[in-house]
Length: 200
Image (cartoon, rainbow, N blue to C red; front, side, top):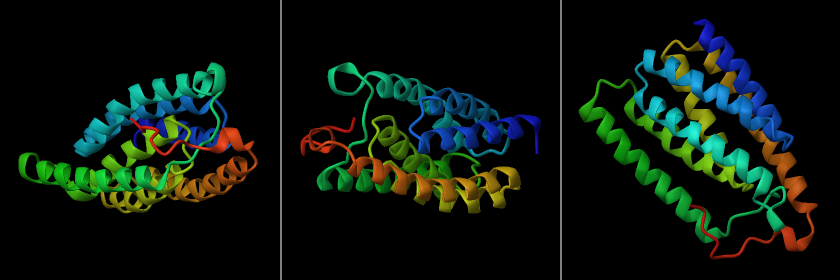
C-alpha cells in the first residue's frame, strides 16, 4: 500500500460522495483520484486500468463543464434518462468492447486478469460517459463495475483499493436510489429524454 494509493482512495471516496449529492466538487476530487491511479495501476500491471484512467482525465474535465453548462439555456444540467434503445446499445457495445480489449491484452501483453480488467475498463468508460451526461443509468454500470473490481483488486493485493470499491458498491446503490428520487421530482419537460438523443 503506497502513499499515492492512500491519497487516491480518499479522493475517490470524496468523489463518489459528492456525485451522490449532485455536487460539482465530484469533478475536481475525481480528477485528482484518476490522475493518481494512473501510477498505482501501472505498478500493478493493470494496463487496461491505466488506459482507462488516462481517458478519465479528459472525461472528468468534460463532465465538469457539462454539469455546469449542459442544461437548458446553458444552465446547470439536470438528471435525464436514456431511452431503452440507447441503453441496449450502451450495454451491447460495452460487452463487445470487453471481449475485444480482453483478447488484445491476453495475447499482446503480460496483463494480469485481462478479461476482468477489460470489463472494468470498458464498463467504467460507459458509466463515466453517462455520468458526465448526468444520465440516471450511469449507476447501473457503476454497480456492475464495482462487483468485478472488488475481486480484481483483492487478487492483485490492492487491499485498500478493494475496500474502497466495496464502499463504492454501497455508495453506487445509494446514488441510484437518490438520483431516481431526484429524477422523479423533476418537472416533466426537464426529465424527458428524446428517443434519438445521442450519448456520444
